[in-house]
Length: 274
Image (tube, rainbow, N blue to C red; front, side, top):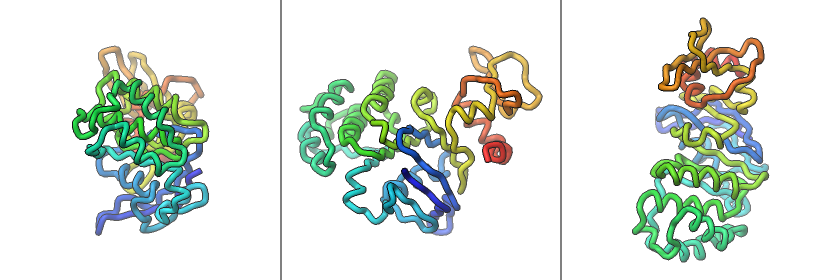
């Protein structure tokens, strides 16, 4: 369990996060959404202990990430958006770096590489951007940690690789894992992430499961615009619109439409979810 209470962080005079509070529970794959500059990467680096909170607290299983205790570090993995092109073969890198994580499984790492169609004997600094990203994803999943923090993991991946990524996350993370994925590519991960966290400048607008989102908002794919629509969009396959779910009907949550509805009606949506 990760508990964030009244978290604040600034870069000089620029306040990025202000009094953020949320709970992240095991067994969930959280999607962290938000516009550029709202603090998604900052939040991830605070969660994994690379930055120190300037206000409030973060506790992961009762420990503070910034204390950098080895017992916590070996239970978490942070995957940045830009990964390092290590001057080493992928298999050798796994053997050496994997020693830092007690649950690292070399056979699993090599197997995931094969599923990703990455040559384990190839040097990482000679790989394409997509192959390098998949190597780091394979390494992260082979570490067998409790907490994963991934910043835009599908950036640089082609369409088949994005499908491989989704399957790997489902297959190689346990029911005890907490996974937080920051992404702009909501369509790539729509069938994977749940619950959804939407950050705004300095605050959290939404932190809810898809079930709760669907109970509060209705996603209509009809032809007539609803008078209380928070967002409407004409697509090649028809119209999608979002409005308050006044009568408890079921609908399929469209994450892109949700994000746009929240962005255009921040206070109304935030009060709805509060």
